[in-house]
Length: 213
Image (tube, rainbow, N blue to C red; front, side, top):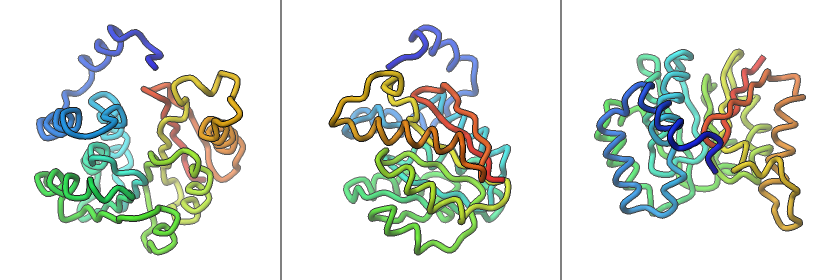
């Protein structure tokens, strides 16, 4: 769903930073070879993620939901010297695809892929994270949030993607639509949880920025 006209979205992209060539190549190959390419963050949102990461200068980044690694590389652009990224995904078929692009970037050695279910992996991680990006199965967003908050540094940033869910958050929820129902609950959770302060940005499909207090 386009919340802005395609013409206006194009104008926004053209007046934001250019997409780096490696990411443009990853964008093209994802659309040519991988199912559901609309899951890719893409040029404009990718530049937003990159800029937010550069503002935070995180020592440790956590990403839940790697897909083809586009957002991973955008977030990596802001890493502090010697910083690391832990990126979690349960799609074994994309593992080598991700690795190829990670290793083609300057941050390959700093990116660790974790294959499996995030709810199983998160309790095994020992880093304290300065920046987290949640972009995985919507039905588990509240569970991820509860596990992540104790793992965050004070002032750390949690980014949550797809929180407007193609505008379904304003529609009557169908009985079998668990994803929309959970996202509605999640958005309310972020609004009222005293451990964070939150702004929901109408970027692409909705991006929430939550700062840990």
